[in-house]
Image (cartoon, rainbow, N blue to C red; front, side, top):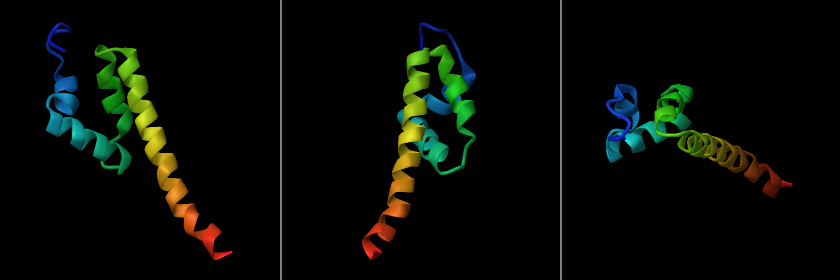
Length: 75
């Protein structure tokens, strides 16, 4: 991050460990439009953008699996 220079948007979403955790939580709980955080990661590298996309997709599918799981047990 320091080598890339000052990126205010990246600092806003991922500047500290606490803000990173809050950003990740808000991205999956609809408290943040997650594409803005993903766009902020572009200056850190496309790899980190894809890791963020994977995180959002994984959490979304995990939630869907938990929501549909009890129905299978009732049958």
